[in-house]
Amino acid sequence: MSCTTLYAVMPDNDGEFTEAGEYRNSYGSAMFIWNALLDTYKRGILNGRPLMGDPGVGWDPSAVDRFSAYDLLWKYDSAGGELQPWERNALKSTYDNALLPRTGMLTMADSLERFAAAHHTGKRLNSVCSLREQAATLREIHAKGALAAAWNQTSCSEFWGGGTYADDEDETFTPYSIDRDDKHWEIEVLPLDGDQS
Image (cartoon, rainbow, N blue to C red; front, side, top):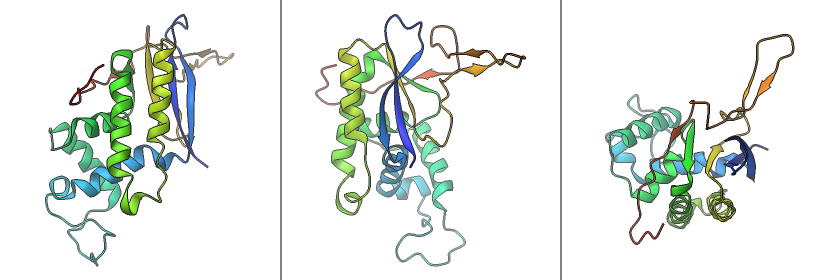
């Protein structure tokens, strides 16, 4: 079964990642967030077009398939589409090469919990959702002094922060370091109402 992995950069580790938590069934992380946002903001994201597979949507050449709709969701976010700050924070955690700085960890934890509370309901209640567990891990690593965190949203892909092998006879491995490498970008975590962090 696939999983989502949360990594931390701890002090005195040369800016390199260590595994902080693993959550079974990666569908409960990025896919859960994308589907919940797509269902909630469908009209704005799809500009009124139907979503293929929705109840009552038969064959319709204007219908958008779900994977194309995810791309439209990301564009909707980039264009400043209508999302709550905690929804936007949760969505940013799903993006490639996203690094969560220490200053945003507690707010991101709050955002993931609020997202789960708002969207892990009704028809989605029986679906897998690991956002609460991820929030707990963020709080734990923050308490231990973590400098940053990052996600590998599915074990079906390689973690962008895992490092590289040299193209030489020895295939020398070099771990990724946020101190020397630049593949990542920092999530600018939006404040929440009543935010204390």
